[in-house]
Image (spheres, rainbow over the protein chains, first blue to last red):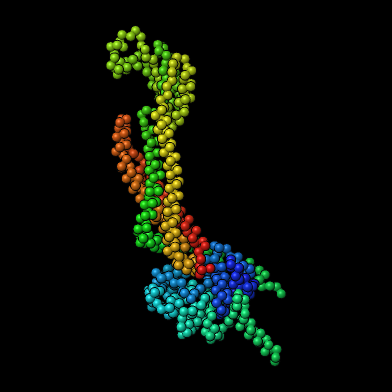
Length: 236
Length: 327
């Protein structure tokens, strides 16, 4: 799985507020995209819908052609095992070591201990924290904690990786490092969607940018570049 | 143009339920969870002891009553004075008539025993025990009647005696039929009352044990909400998230059953001497039975089932609607 399609997706909360309004957007398998917009624009709701932590009021969300809105409850865990998720506040377990935190998705998936250890060490190696596997999260810096969160998100080799403000608490240099990590995972074929309001940072990455405003699509750099190209082609 | 949303989406579901896991991995995972849960329960010993005591008391009361009822039932079966009736014949009746009545009952399945006492035997016995043998010797005729003691077969209700009495009353030469059932009815009524009380208490206290365990497990769930949220996020199934809490319930239930067993043993040790004295006054010896390894195994099984039941209840309530990321 890797291709994501939102078709006329609307999410209205119980208080009547519409977080997304008939949003239609798609992401090719193996692509990387930044989701931006002001606070309350609908970025987090978009990611929650993608993780099936919420259900849209209307519309379809297709992952490789399968509408996940209609996915039965008992299938959701297996669906989520195929998606890596990174969050601003890491969601690391304080009483478990770095190793155990990263191993959690594999344990949940029922992986053999020997394979699990190999995968965990590979993931920790990718984020440069192999030597800190026995430490607890409280012994790590904020940037290191975020990298543990990324290692946990990718340890299961997901086809889709999503991140919600992953650099929110980091300085510009660390933020660049984190973004480079995402880029590396994208280069091996993972579909990566990063929600961030740091426009300077995401522009520097030179990837597709989707801007949401009050739950609607305001700007899609991919559509704009296609339109520009079409306009340029027409001129010649 | 055909909308992409209308495309056929019926293709192989990549997120269907996985088949059975490798049993070795499954067992290893259970062993790990069992060990971690035991560490959690023993690490909060104060709370665990309270739960064990509460569950133990909840199991001890109906368990003790069950033993009491079983012993009363056994006592009735073993008692020499089985339920029965005595047929008194008319005084001066020829000896053939009582014998004929006795013989007519010999093949009756409701009858366990027949003991005929002739008028002469009754008089001899009376002379021996009454101490007025000299006075009786001056009587010109025997005033005592022949009698037939009929003992009811085991397992039959006392009401069967009424049927037998009705048949016998109409027989020729029968003067009176006396049913000796008062004490038996009392014991039977008491046994039945104890049985019903035991059932009622078992039901009420089982609900209590389930609720105590459920509350304790609910507290354990609340203490581990962060971990559960992350587990849900990375794709843990309900069964996987529930597993440690079922072990909590199991440990609480087993511990409670052990405490219950100890309480029942203590209760019986406490009650046995006065009960033995009471039975001794009726010429009977007391031996309380039922406190067997099988009974303890049943109690452990019941405790475990109630504990796991309580844990399931708590986990089902709390984990189903677990919020992740505050959605």
